[in-house]
Amino acid sequence: MSHNHGPTFKDEMQYESLRDDGMSKENAVRIANTPNSKAARKRGQSSPYEEWTKNELYERAQEIDISGRSQMTKEEIIDAFRHH
Image (cartoon, rainbow, N blue to C red; front, side, top):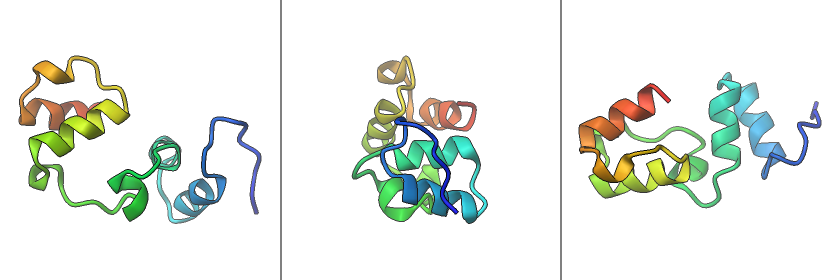
């Protein structure tokens, strides 16, 4: 059953599907609101961050607005994802 979560959701069906699969609300919102990202296409089933290139990590950090990302190393960006 679908719930009305307001206008902040770009893809309500995807959000509901992710929540039904047990994903946290925060992660489901991020994925449902991220157009054409790897996370959106894979429905959150992406490879470990360590396997991503620094550029891929940077682009994802930009999508979710991690501050200070341009000065971070690959390891620092990964740490920021895990503590965001």
